[in-house]
Amino acid sequence: MTIPALALDDVAFAWPGRGGFSLSCPAFKMAPGERVLLIGASGSGKSTLLSLICGIVPATRGRVSVGGTDLGTLSAGGRDRFRAEQIGVIFQQFNLLPYAKVIDNILLPLRFAPHRRTRAGGGVTEAARLCAELGLPDEVLSRQAGRLSVGQQQRVAVARALIGAPPLIVADEPTSALDAETQDSFLRLLFDRTDEVQSALLMVSHDERLAPRFDRVIRLADIVSTERSAA
Image 1 (cartoon, helix red, strand yellow):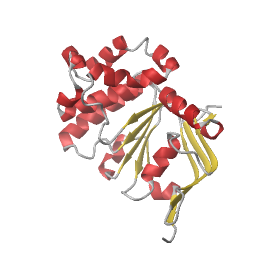
Image 2 (spheres, helix red, strand yellow):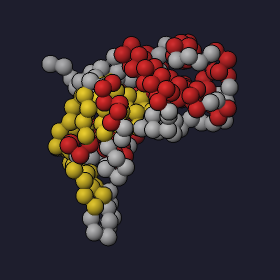
Image 3 (cartoon, one colour):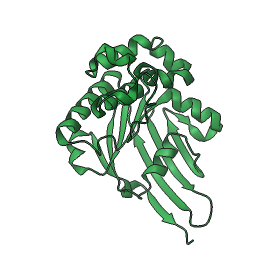
């Protein structure tokens, strides 16, 4: 029996306080190596769902599993360590350290993930290989990330997420600010690299034009229900 890359079973979560936001997800699964596009508008619960999947917050009820590990059985520190080892995240705004060198940005996840660092062979050679495959010249590695073009920063963000071959990649609206040509190039690079290491890819977007590029397309409202309590 194949263990899902990601599985949510009878999951519920509520932010505390009056006027709080609550979310529930009866069931959702991803197979290893699968590409899934999750369509969701702003305010639809996307950020809360991604926080649950990445173990940033624990579910109030139910089970969130990544590669067979129930995140609910881990402490807060344990979830942080697990996320560093098992999940690569591509943020909408890339979240690079602007004054740090590109190589240091790419290697950052490995500082907190010894097994991932081992899979990356220590990191430096793998970082250089990923950059080369993503079309970044060697000299970029020693530049400050904040001095790169937007397109170069995108590639650095992908390299940081992929280094050490985490089994799950989560991408939060990574193409929202891109023109059509740049978007196409970015997706081809992302798909090529995730296919190479057989990582599952969960990408959240509001852009339905991306649908044909994915194995499966799911509307957030079809798997998640949300509610805001009265203030």
